[in-house]
Image (cartoon, rainbow, N blue to C red; front, side, top):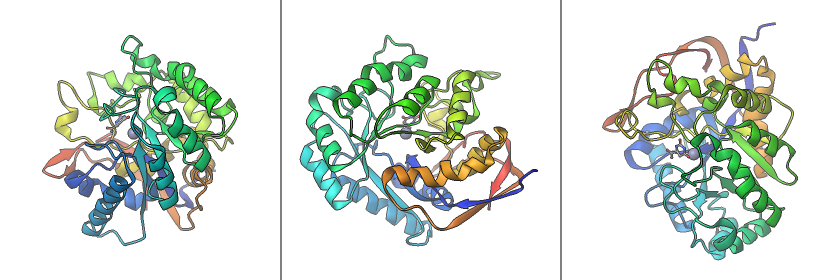
Length: 350
Ligand code: DOR
Ligand code: ZN
């Protein structure tokens, strides 16, 4: 039987880039409409490395919400700290005690946008911090790609498992770890079978597309993100994981706004903008797999369960119907191009 209306518990986005200033004001309304909470990435310039900076950023998000007319309390930004070689164990304790951050993000130095200040020697210089995180129960969110320039860009996630994840989990077996924006079958197999508290977020683009889409009829920069889209076998593995019974795979859009000019550029930025239509994109992927009945667990239940936060109580409705994705959206003085601009989706968020 075809399902035309889908009502589920309101979802959360466990991996989101909101940026700052005018960009923040332009995008906050999209996420706040679709999600109750979002884990906000700390890769600003300069990065959000301390509790004080996280609190100040959270206030700016709240101000942007007021400016955008978003009802108070309808959306909660969950803040993160950016791990550097100099992060102190005291800062971790403070983050946990104040609730100022729900997690710490590892950007291996040089891996992606604003990662220059990231950790260079995780198991060496950061070991006391990791020990503290393990003790107080603050999760580590990892951008799981090796940065060795000699490694092929399509192999960087798979190699990260051997070079970083396995030694990390061996040294800190009780540390809660989220393998963010997973893109490979290798990653799925690892997360599904690993011992201990490991989970992964999955983006809509990695579930909907393989790497061919980046080159269809020419170079299409709006499909370029990091980790880069992979082969079809990997997309299929991600879709299977998201729609499976495993509690370890949940929603994280990695919506990463960059202006049209910075994407359509000789050296275009990495990131897909999906905050506008995230739930429609995920519903499309789950529908294609014939697994719409699994969307609620993926989008609304497993994330809060992993983070030890209460599940949302409000419900949302998605309806079958044509939704033409706009070609461009306002973005401060510039514009932004959403993922799959100009295409038609078969689901609409009501
Ligand atoms: O595509 C990406 N964009 N991947 C990341 O890891 C960072 C993000 C961004 O901040 O633009
Ligand atoms: Zn991200």
